[in-house]
Length: 339
Ligand code: NAD
Ligand code: TYD
Image 1: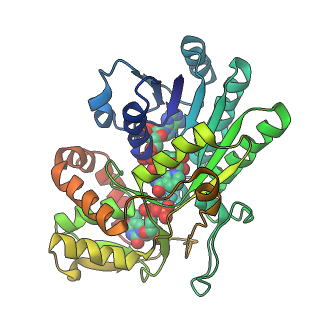
Image 2 (image 1 turned 180 degrees about the horizontal axis):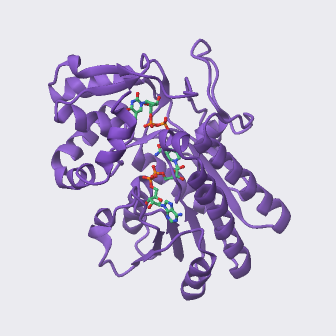
């Protein structure tokens, strides 16, 4: 089996590649990645020389490059992680989100149609459902929850999901979609909440909580997400959407406090800054479909996963120090300088 994994130099894609090479040693994994600011080739260094791995630098929007790769590799499956993924960046500059997340998805699916494929899997997000109110803890996102997006990021992901489903209905393309809640773990880019707070806390820099920090996210350890995608690829039903989440709702402020505690730093580092525009209040997944149909349950408890993640950042300083010393500094100044 040959599987093209797009966006494999990013956070979840790289973890998925490691997971697949370990758990499906006979499969060939071809990573296609543009290496945007979020893609990091050093992340893939441990597998670069693996006999069943190939890396190709290309843009999923580049039709010619994508078709060339299909001609060379004759992939059996495509798993599309490639995306612009940060909500705050989408608020500043929506255009590239529409380009990569929607048009790039269309290019990949067109190639799948032309060359034939046994499965195209779209990695989507629970953010396509919008948010839930804080005072209704009884409500959860199911696969039937209407799409109701808040940010240019989530809108671009929802548009891509609709396109994927339309290719199944119109052309019979064998697709599946997964909509996962917030991930955390190794190789998470430092612009996102958990790695940003770990790094700032370590450096004893202010830890910028948006608004009061009461927003709730449903956190899942990245390896549990990878295992869920593997199950969907091999056992999920064509044309179906699967929500992925582990009933682990946490308020932002509580996560930030836990990070201070784990690193033995004072909570006085926590600073409240201007809120995100259109900030979603609560995400919470109902995972009954994937657990009932495919037997998936998350294995990593949040307390263990967070501790593991913090220790990973402590043990891999060179990985994130290289990122935060480069162009990321300019981003940080723009986003947080006068906030
Ligand atoms: P990330 O930003 O860490 O990585 C994205 C990767 O895609 C990078 O390697 C980047 O170079 C690559 N890329 C971007 N544009 C590209 C293009 N035009 N062509 C080829 N490659 C391109 O993102 P992530 O957090 O790993 O998220 C991966 C996927 O999972 C995304 O589709 C995202 O929407 C989805 N998702 C993420 C989360 C989360 O919590 N991070 C949760 C649910 C779903
Ligand atoms: P983020 O990691 O950007 O993921 P998403 O917006 O996709 O859920 O943010 C998680 C939560 O943390 C979200 O409610 C915004 C908040 N947040 C902060 O309070 N401060 C920060 O510096 C960042 C990056 C996020």
